[in-house]
Image (cartoon, rainbow, N blue to C red; front, side):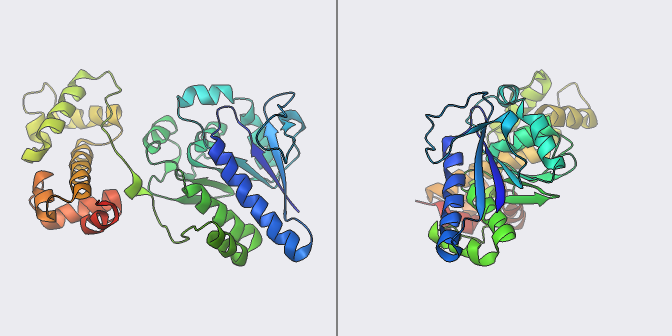
Length: 321
């Protein structure tokens, strides 16, 4: 029987824990029906010395962190929305425990923004990882040693797993089940929970908005110019024409402040505008391209697919009302 520990971290998302438990309980029921014995032994691990027994999960009595057994697999749920620095400070006692579990032979998996816990523990050092598309930039900035894969649904790197946002939880659970139980069980669960097993990326779920959370006034001015003039096909050179900075220095400062290059920033502004127009279905695709600041159809399609993961036509078919 495989021992699985599920963290009841402070500020965890209830829906994340519920999804994890629901899937593993379903698998145990399948094995009980077919073999007479559950496959997974589930333990909820609490940071409290005396865990609250009035939790929603009445099938389990949580155990305190210092009494948690060595696991074969440790699962870290998503965090509630909020400041990640605060979340990590409130869960600091889990970090050395995660390291000990990993050294003891456990594999470790995080779901959505739970990846920040793994990152802070050091278990993702020089490893690939993903998270919710809206949190990927913050993860890359806070932990530059991690190979962040913002489009990925699931990553699996040296016994450490991560998943993208929301329903990507189920794709990581299926990935884990296929490894531990075999493809037959993974397919059974996928059908039972109505999960598409072939989703390859999460980029078309992204909603991008410009970040102004920095102190570089020159970069802020450049951002405003881009956001106001992107439809006019403005170039980086035109944006900085009368600013007291060289092109090379500007690109360096811009990337430090925003996390991306000026060209990428312009592309994202334009593609986000195109997405909104495609969702409204009021313009043909050529009109959308022109309104978004492109005049080369091939270039527009290439950049759109690179950022979104779908062609403009595919995106409209998926999201237009």
